Image (cartoon, rainbow, N blue to C red; front, top):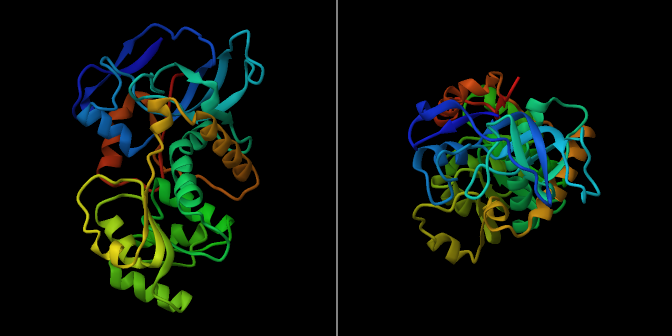
Length: 330
């Protein structure tokens, strides 16, 4: 089969078209004909830096996949050939990725593709939806009436988090920069948009909620964003980040007795535990998409898989709005 392969770690130029053996079917897995994938920050970080979570070289990257099941084992009871599915199912240590004509996928990690959107739109959903879900509901225990700050609401995880929070009955303020991104976040259900600085966030919260502090905050980038969330939430509130790398001053968190949490959604892929839960989350996401409650935001520029280096570069440079989709194969 054809695949976009990397033979070494480095810049966007390391991708090259190559030939690899078609994956052999095995128990508990299905073979998916890949139709589309999307670019997540973890994809370009693996491409750039390699271990510890990268697949062995020569490597096929990208976890997000949407496609059509081509083969199932004789023991498979649920999935059948021809089913349209999606998931975040590889591209890390121990599993091949979606930048190939075919991808061998653990059947526990996938769900049925929403019927009302394209393969490209579907492919942007898995990683960011699972991450947002785990941050809001598993770590944040979000419930109706809660006030929440979502940083970077026009980004991948952020734009799903804003919509899920509104669906759950929470009141949402998000940060964004630039008029187009601010308008997008408002269209997704945020009550207001603030600039990234803590003063803007507090002023906006006070104007909308009558208090400058939030019940919880979800940081979608790490670094200064997590520090901002810590400053923004109330005493005994919850501060959650999807990127715990770096150094943080936790004195404010200590003084407010905050619950601090980190989401690392790739853990089931890397360790093999909890994979069924990812499939269940995506099943619910598919239902919400078909009901018109969740809408994936796809960057207007959709790339062919032969242009994957350009797609990586666009995301690295911070020029994407929503998620970057990539068509795979013919």
